[in-house]
Length: 83
Image (tube, rainbow, N blue to C red; front, side):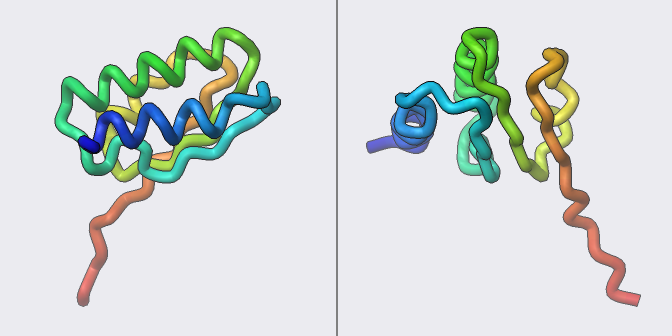
């Protein structure tokens, strides 16, 4: 099973019971840009049906794509100061 397939299955399992909120930790971390966009589109589609998402990511591009009221994406800066 490929990364994108695993992410789609994880998303389906997370929302099958219509939760009010679902948490996603790095849902696009191992995916290429196209697949990451596809997964985020699926999050947005599910979000429109009433599930809010808390998404944590290191990917600033993904974080900046959040435009819907009920989609909260937190970007964690992975740059560490070793000084």
